[in-house]
Image 1 (cartoon, rainbow, N blue to C red):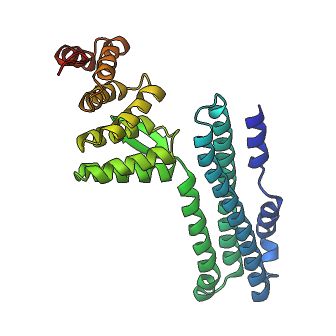
Image 2 (tube, rainbow, N blue to C red; image 1 turned 45 degrees about the vertical axis):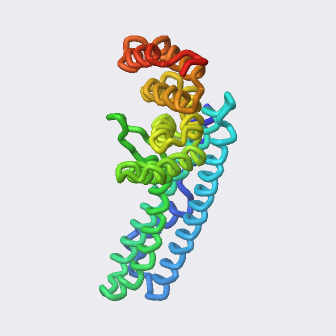
Image 3 (tube, one colour; image 1 turned 45 degrees about the horizontal axis):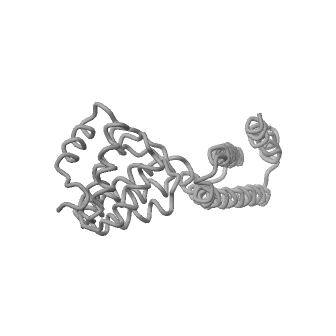
Length: 287
């Protein structure tokens, strides 16, 4: 209910825009506009755009606070509710701003048409406002969720998450394993509650294992197993975790990790692989 009331509050269009639209929709008044009046009207619209940009800055600040709270609330039960409310606030405000921008653009176009200005005069009046509108649209787009395809799944994340994740993926794809591992490590530190976290932790652990940095691989994959126990990437992550533990001389821990896989992921390829590796792994004390 609280979220619905908040959406209703944000959804009410500003009265100033309604007043503008009422004024410009009266054809009889069009003849009363002089060039000076037209320019004053345009300046007024520019002022309203400035207000929209100020509101956009507030949204961006709240977005940054939301990302910061993701790290702080990672271990708290109230995390989902808090983040959901913040995302609803941002989405509702962004939608209201899009409506306001559309009203401003429509108001400018109708005003210019009614004043019957020359093409040169029209360009001089409209170009600065169009530039402002494009800037606001670009900033709004950065706040909207972006799709990322991983394992044939469509995951929605913020633009900053998508950019960081895809940059790290590109490094691994180009065989820059050390740089890719570091990039995924940075991603997991910045976005601990990201919907992409299971894939990022799995990739980080696998990359560190590949460059034989076993302590970092163990850290990332242990976190994957703890925070995402039933995710599709976790079973393979546990296999790599056991390998990292074995390579580090932690034979007992490796045996425990391998023994857990068939219990947690029965009838899977990972379970069968874990059973085979467990048989081949020496017992503690043997070499």
